[in-house]
Amino acid sequence: MKKLLLSLLIGALCILLVAILLPAILGGISKGPNPPSPASKGRSLVLCIISKNIDFDALLQDCIWPESPRFTEDSEHIKKFSEAYFAKLFELNSDLKFSMFSGGGISTATSIDDFLAGGKNMWSYIGGDTPDSPMPGNHPPFLFTKNLRLTNEDLQYYSKPENANDPSFFSKFDASVKPYGDSRVVFVYRDGSTSFMHAKDLTPSLFFRGCEMPPNAHVVHPR
Image (cartoon, rainbow, N blue to C red):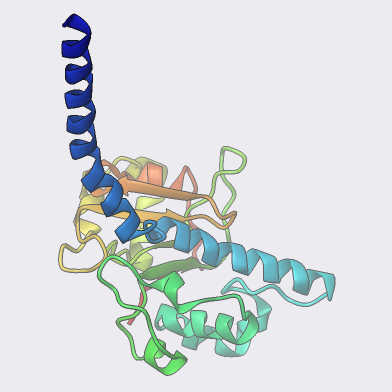
């Protein structure tokens, strides 16, 4: 009798467990894998640049960072909006995908003309000389999500040591701008490493990583 009751109890527990887990299992099967995050897309974008720079270096040609002599004739044009620089990269690197620029409510462009028209790009970038850092390997971001609305003047002001913890840095987030408004930000460094932070936790010190920006540093946002 005890064995029968034990068997019934075990059977009931198994049925209950299946009932709990089955929706999650089926949901996972129907939804498939999660789409790439903005951080992984930004990393893929920078790694494409690095890879192409290696190819060009072997050919004794200029790199494709925005301040490269390769873009001297177009330097003013690619400073107007970030799509202009990225469009140049599409001409030079077939590994780039429009999906690397979309996410967080920003749709994917269907053509280069669609991309250049605006609204299909989440990345702002910082161009100009890369400053030296007090700590080896520390440099400011190259890419960051466009909801952080820094200006060229901000680069100079907030990167100074005396402003490293200025709380007004939070005011540079625009709540109306996708992908994250004033809630968070993703940034990507020139070595392909990434950071993802809540806006309220981000300070100039964490963003610039101890680097004081040179006079020719400039920030370029999407149109």
